[in-house]
Image 1: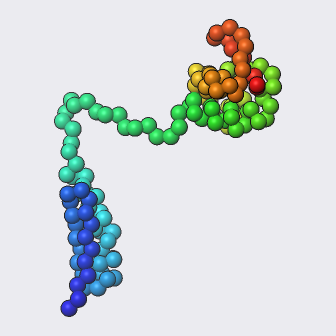
Image 2 (image 1 turned 90 degrees about the horizontal axis):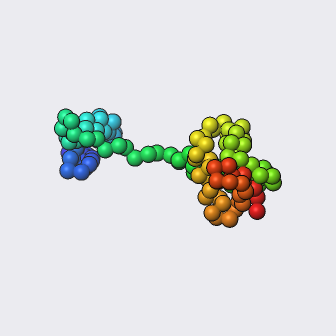
Image 3 (image 1 turned 120 degrees about the horizontal axis):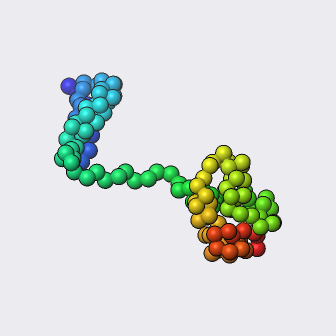
Length: 134
């Protein structure tokens, strides 16, 4: 008699299902997956009590990157910087266009990047810069 089998390996763990037909093996795959996930979770090393935890990696884009993208793709092309604009004005315009309420310092950071790249110019004393198009 013919036997059908599927083996799944995750790290050092292997789970196998056998059946008399391909359909029987295929119908058992969800259970095989559940067993594999449960076994993997059970065998995962658990941190000892009081051990420091490692923070998970951040997902998504930072506020400064979001501000930079919106400034470059929407504000500059629209002529928003045809007159000098403060960080507050830029922040308010970003919020109006995108609904994002970004931190002032992140918007300021994005504006500084564009100044350093030569995309924008600035005027005024430190802490009270106004940015405008080149």
